[in-house]
Amino acid sequence: MKKIMFISAAIIALCSFTITGYNVGDKATDFKLKNIDGKMVSMADYKDAKGFIVVFTCNHCPFAKAYEDRIIALNAKYATKGYPVIAINPNDPNAVAEDNYTTMQQRAKAKNYSFPYLVDSTQNIAHTYGATRTPHVFVLQKSGSDFLVKYIGAIDDNSDDATAVKDKYVENAVDNLLAGKAVNPTSTKAIGCGIKWKS
Image 1 (cartoon, one colour):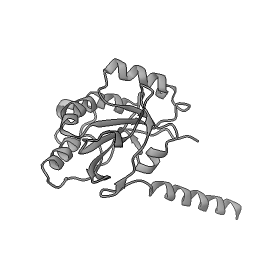
Image 2 (cartoon, one colour):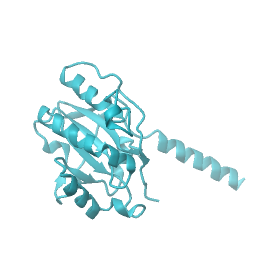
Image 3 (cartoon, one colour):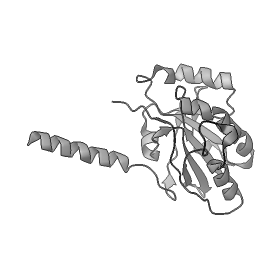
Image 4 (tube, rainbow, N blue to C red):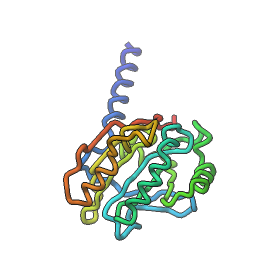
């Protein structure tokens, strides 16, 4: 009987975990997280932003590394148009040492990041947003004082080869928002390494 109760509790806990996070159209919470320069960063700091490309990513994941230059390119293309990239590392560095804060600083310096690279040390933001992979993207649009979720998922349709990409999901989403059009698709499956949650 105890075993059945334990299994039932585990199933309930798993279901509770999987249903958390945002859906397209939801209002996203702001955050205040430490950047690689030691300063705290929030979306509210960007007074002129029309929205954001929030990317949950990390140092060690092969998928995150494969997409790194594309993330840099997204910021180069859209920051000046009002949709800057904000990268967030949600991984537990005790699970993967390469995802520690010092290595974040080194990685950002080596790749000359032109956007914030924040550490979600409590993992609360990743849980709140519903991020599950690295990379996992949330495109937000500012509406008054709110940030509305307009797209969730992958950056594009080819994690292996940037030159073979056919559908640039994030670019299409932001382009549509800038043009006042509906985003389509509004969600795709994020492809990457599972987030390393604290035990």
